[in-house]
Length: 377
Image 1 (spheres, helix red, strand yellow):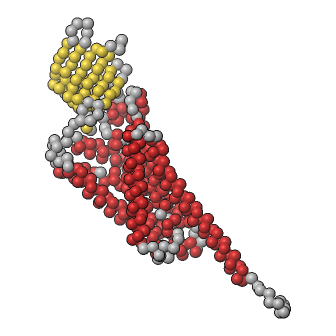
Image 2 (cartoon, helix red, strand yellow):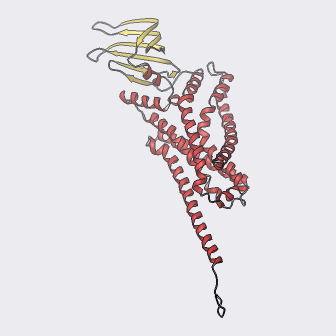
């Protein structure tokens, strides 16, 4: 247990500074991007700073796999340079035994990431969406339909506010009976929508009857839970909410591909983190004193950032080219984990053969020799 704590502590001690450095770098890049929107609408510099600070948990989740690789290379690399890894292997600890505390620490981090994705990130994304909405309202139109109504949201959403809303109500014969056009709609807790700047057109056998009003209520056919998942950015939804949104969109005959890509992306992060943590160990089981620690850290940083870019490209490519969400998002993480496990297994096999050969040599050195002409007694 003391050895396990020592190895896991070294892993975390190496991952923490790496994560802080990466957070500073990516946060600076994010701040420069947010500052470009300053002056649009009511968006000010303080809003950009708040968005960058609130985005730190999201960046931690994205950079966790890279930091796990750096933690193994830095933390356990220091032990390897001090001959502690060689001493542990000489004491009989196999590569799998050395990998066990790393895997336990990585799984603990993965569980923490899942909790952050479900409890912390949704609220943060909702707040950042509200701040981004200060720049301008707009976006792709969203179509919804209930049993006797069609809803078109043309101006986008921000928090629980819908912009440029058109509501088309149908009668029992599914003929158009009423059209409501509102500049904005507030989604209330009881499921009703508070429409503002409303233009109401009622159709009947005679000429259409048109009225305007500053505000009116509309009873939505969607439950508050369904509306909640519909009026917030999909990035702000937890795994459970994404599953619910996928079901709602599928029931309305709408495209669910992007939501399914995000769903599997969230599930793939813990797998990638575990694979990255395990990948660095085989690199430290050989002769490491000839390789400077700075060189190992640089190679690890390059490999980790390349994998980060590959994950980002695969996610965006899955949305653009409509690739299979599971293969394109979770596939690279699973392949990475499989490669790491294969390398650890190969190191285990190599150590077993080496120990067997050393035992044979030792037994041969101690075996009695017979010299001709001399008695063996």
